[in-house]
Length: 576
Ligand code: ATP
Ligand code: MG
Image (cartoon, rainbow, N blue to C red; front, top):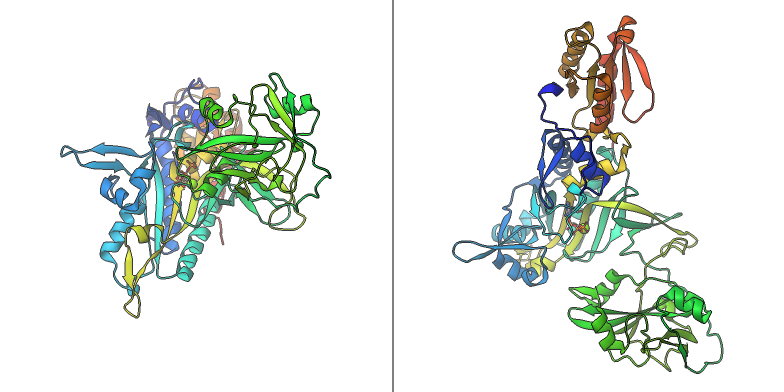
């Protein structure tokens, strides 16, 4: 391929509305262009990387026994009404009407459509298990589409769905997918971690996410420094400490004026108490009803845990007016005493604690000597707080929790009978008894995986593609006049490499070497082969790996074999 002919419009300036590095670099490198918020054109270079992710995913899905099909992007509302998700899925679901006023949506995911297909065409245990997948366009009207391909509205996903006769079979299907995911991300050349996750909108009993490790990732991951425990921070459990012995005599509850002292830091400094001796009282609205969550002041409430406990479809922090209605005071002065709410939920960190400070439910007032049982009684104790760095691992004895950031590229779910029950997806077992199929579903964000590769691998000069996902393996940069000997040698090298199956670009543009090197670095070709006069006089080529600082001189007679070996070694990563 000649760079002079390629549609790869690179940009010198960083586009102003691109926040994430991958977004900036993919725009600058001429890989993608924005059409509308969260909707992108894939240009030839971008599409090549996307296709490489797809190819690895496809090969590993097939190897794991899944069969590819293709389902429609437009889905009838009736199926979503049947599963109950038409009402539950919020504005992320893009709804539309046809000319007959029938309702449809653009598929954000395909559980309903696949369940409908399988229930119509599979009757007997003899036809199971089945695992069906597609690589297809999804649409989610995300609140904040941003970060380019990482959080788009229109994006490509691989989604697979398994159907089994019993739990043992479903577990085996899940395990096969989990292992396939390990092979996929290993073959992509990415550093990643599998973590326990919350099941969110999709539902089901258990799920795990595959996270590409990158400091810029949107997700926080908690992991143990000693055993294999790792979880999304949203899900991370707490090693519940034993109830602390009660400190002694109950103090009387006392009102203290605290003018303008609202935050935990302000109040603890003002009252001269530790944050752990304060009660943090947060008002949320769960499906339209106010609920109150309590933790000690040294911790944060984990809204996902709260939402799961309440089985709420929507959970939000209350607005100031609701807070005032529930507590009688403006934001910053809430306390648990005297509150009349259906759910007054307390984190385990409050168990066995006494003589605490809290908001006074009155402007500019706090109270001290607040005691459980006497002054307030939680409706339930639960694990409601966020795990923190340095605390004990909930799984092993002795390990400490650490945190790192990641980008969720894949998600595997055990669905159980969530969809097969509501949508009556059944089969007849050996005894002729009708049973619900046990399902699993397994997603990979194709574009997000490509973008995550850039988030994980880049420097100030541009992208550093892992070889398996690079749009091309190598770029050849001849230096000198376009009719000079360097060009002749470059052309020959180009043809020889191409004949070996190396994907190579010849930078035949009439540009200065500096410009060529800059673009090569920006696009991030894993290998750069420079043919200059000095090296050629010695019968050699400069070989530079994008990730390395130095180049090496390789004799012209050896360069083809050497590049071929590097490329094939990287592509044939042996996996489990
Ligand atoms: P997130 O929590 O990041 O919004 P999700 O949990 O809603 O994602 P899933 O329903 O698990 O996503 O979808 C499967 C995969 O699809 C995700 O692991 C991710 O790689 C990809 N994906 C989801 N939403 C987007 C998006 N808006 N843009 C690009 N890829 C996405
Ligand atoms: Mg997910």
